[in-house]
Length: 285
Image (cartoon, rainbow, N blue to C red; front, side, top):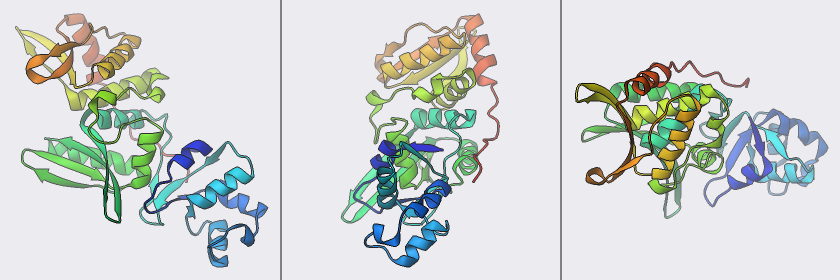
């Protein structure tokens, strides 16, 4: 996946340094000499050049700026050469579904305790079957391992990956922490019908349900953020599913998209509930 110079710079923070595996960056080392990189050994330089060791972002940014590049192709990210994560083609429906899941029942956690600076993505569910499915999806999408914990009546699934957490925050504008009022629909999912369906399905499977209301099937999606639901409503309208404006449910302190209109419910089931998320296709490594 291509990453802009600005985005690569945004992945720098005070903790352990983010590193990348990039064929393009390794090839560009031929334009430099060992003396261009202070504080690194000759061995490190040749390992980067031969794609045998991840390249620190401080070095990558220096290359990008010296060659006046606008973007760089990156295959893998890691932290100090640790567990690698691979970014899939963001145009995959399954990736858009993942974004919906994170914005539905997930959050990005960043904590600093003394010298420890940790990042993770957390997804919560009361279904162990869902947790198992999410684990498989995340492994296929990012080649990333996950752990989960049973807490009372639900499960917390964690992806401990600083690069992925920072990319979701900086590239896809998913807020850090439980900032419900700031969430919004990522721009990437608005570009094609399949991406819209995948995203809405992810949100619905976390924050929605279909139930009987006065002997009629009804659909609802519930969220703390009115603006987010307005964005979801607009996407639904784009694919021919017409909800009314979200209303405020004072008893549950949340906003709701709801309908019991037979044609709309049937359309939602056909286009979203029954929509199949195919196995993700990753970019060549």
